[in-house]
Length: 66
Image (tube, rainbow, N blue to C red; front, side):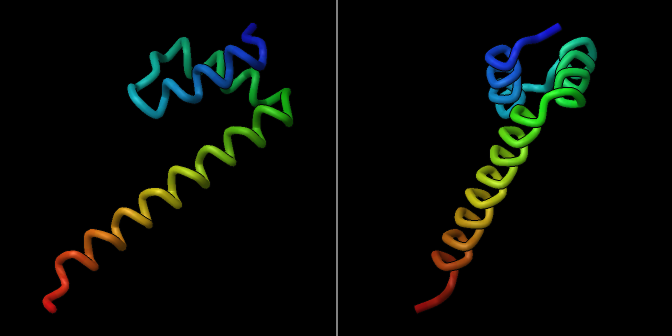
């Protein structure tokens, strides 16, 4: 089973590439039992979403005619 340090690495890797089925299953198993890592995962999701919204807003602002 993965430890918390390995889970944080795997969650970060998932931002850059698709995880294998085995990686996803190991991750889900750990997250089911570890509240700290579930919280970390939710925080990463929130940060990713906030960054996407910021970038989308900047792109719309740049396209707006002066």
